[in-house]
Image (cartoon, rainbow, N blue to C red; front, side):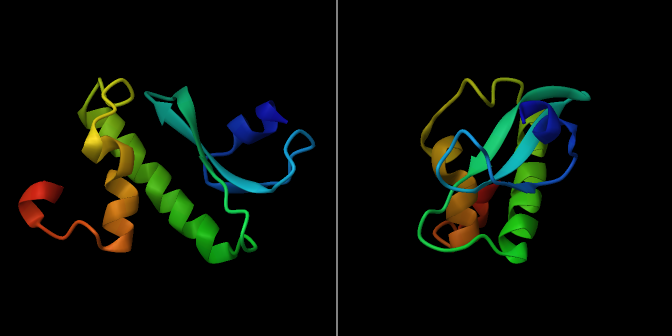
Length: 99
């Protein structure tokens, strides 16, 4: 199951035998090597094709952040924990803070 997830280059819907709820997986890569996984789980509604597209965009944004900051995964500060979800929800709108 993990090998199948890691073979994909885009976000994908996963109905795992090991978890009780479906989720979206995006395999994060740095220099063509696997650097981690972005798992998006939503137990309150079904996963839609739009959710998968947004997850694909989000995964690419995280890879770009990892490319620009080698310590991205280790620095778990306020902005890194919620930055992308805050941008997508509109909670962060100040251009200086986004930059």
